Length: 352
Image 1: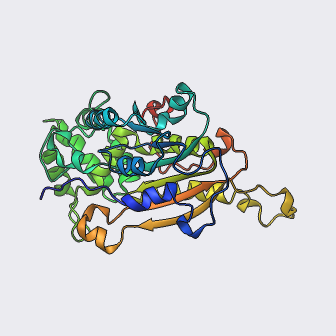
Image 2 (image 1 turned 90 degrees about the vertical axis):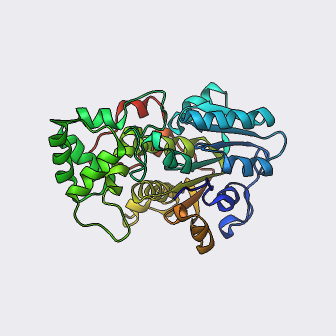
Image 3 (image 1 turned 30 degrees about the horizontal axis):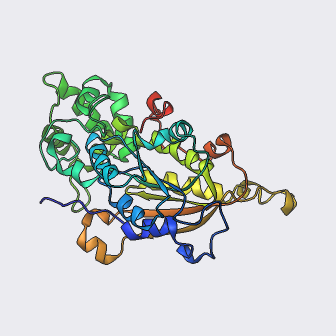
């Protein structure tokens, strides 16, 4: 079945960035620029659904920085830039937020949106190698112009590395068996296509949740590893929190538990920095003050899920920055990376 591209949680995400009443909060504090008249970041442009709606609600003098690693997404962004000069394009991932803002001379922004995961066009194009439902080259790179493909990594990684990635990033209980089968298979013939990997995993994973393909968790894990998705998110969240001006909003849409857990833990730590000292005899005035106010958690409603099944797992979390100063080191302390698989160097060099 082919899917047309539908932007998930479109209206709620833009309301999260711009609406003073979002989350039943009182009006935002005064800022240098009123809502809609500042600098905003779409860290995951994709095909531009969120950006287009956001632009329709921004003032003529506002600025919108759009980030993406996918060359096809950048081409779409360039077409939008041709008709709207408020758009500034960064062909890189959101982990480069700090670097790019410095390059552009921007100290603070009014809102940051991150829509995590894989876009529908990427899934539906067999040649991108993201889907076990469509046979194609085993690629899985968000940015097809650089980096190691999934096929190359699976041909070179040792069994322990493969097992840990599948266990940590896919939360797959058959990770050892799958890794062992992959290593055994490549002794005679390397895995080259998504269909070959899906069939191999299905031969090992004999039981699975109803309605879920046996290779679902393995494909998720390999994709996350190839694109360093969690490591990059771990760089982006602290950068976003430290770059937001007072009253600025961070809105993050997650599609699986690992991403959502990281976002939830980060925002909770920023909202309650003194939680670990709550039982100590410390005067209230000496306790750390919140760096953000949590504005809520939203999931797609029944109507959206019925119209777009891919929205069923989406979770939008929103936080608003307070006036309390926050350093990069403090913000980085809010992050917890899952599992044992290491965060590799590229994310530290600010690639998405």
